[in-house]
View 1 (tube, rainbow, N blue to C red):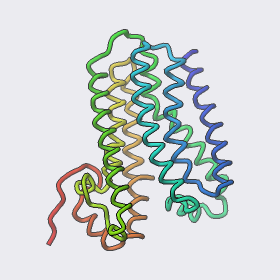
View 2: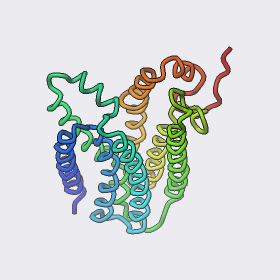
View 3: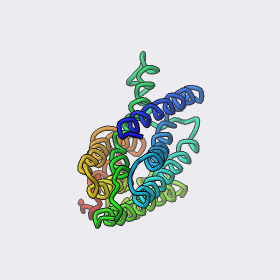
View 4: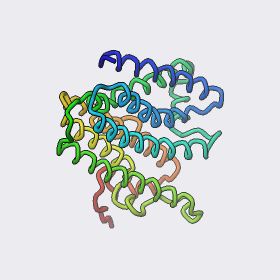
Length: 263
């Protein structure tokens, strides 16, 4: 399959999948499932590229294993969170219902389709890597795989620490500031971004690999300016109030660092 046809087929297939899940979201009245679909979609995308791409089978298998494990871990984590709270919808989508009142249905359908397109765009590294025919692994690819392992471990640990904190009844109304959350208000987001940096480093060993920078740059922008930290902190301020404001004053928003001491 030609590279262009590979991209067109991937985008078309994902748009159809997201359209079907938009219908399901309307039926169950919970649009938070788009986060689950988005996460799992990367596994489908990289496996599609690995199967039909013309690259070296060992490289394709390594990239497919890395991206699939990350995708399944994140997707399953979000599935448990979204379904565990159903029918209560994630606060971000509750807010979008208010912001898009009057034209919510078409705008949300467009949002689902944009998520499909974003998977293909962010998956540029997978596409580039699965087309590389070189029959040996480059040191950059080994470094990328090592960084990916660190990032995935950090993200899983941050998620586990937050989940344990929420399960503790004594934590009700308090801000999670234990473990990695003592050094960053969003360590899960930081390590999520680091995963994308790892994919970029891995892709640099392939022709046109620098184009994969679209992944970490886009994720960083989304996390810092759009759907990540801004919306999450708005929700935290609404639910935790002054306790979260104190947390904001002492703890780094993104990069893990030692907390400030305030009088």
